[in-house]
Length: 103
Image 1 (cartoon, rainbow, N blue to C red):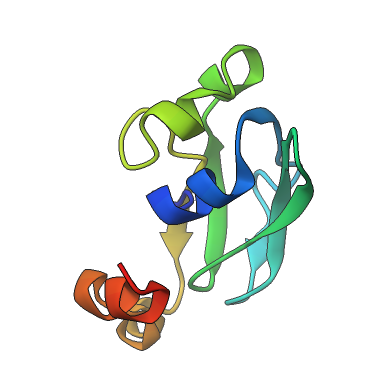
Image 2 (image 1 turned 90 degrees about the vertical axis):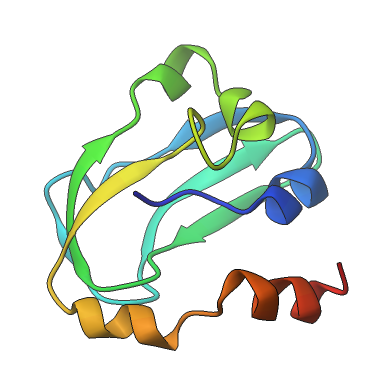
């Protein structure tokens, strides 16, 4: 399951639209899989590990604010079938991420 961090949703502000048109596509790590629109800005969404996008959270069509309210739960954006699970080892741990953002 892929989404954005609590820090990212807070920095973006109120989410008003999530666009994902890559359902069923095979993408590489760091490829853009969609975009997220907030009152402040529009930002690309990057895939953290290579794989096939298998599902988009359709609830975001009518309630994009779920990303703000529950980014680690109901606000997930896509599901991915990983083709290179070893790429997950290159991601930051929660503790490393908190240190990076100064939290």
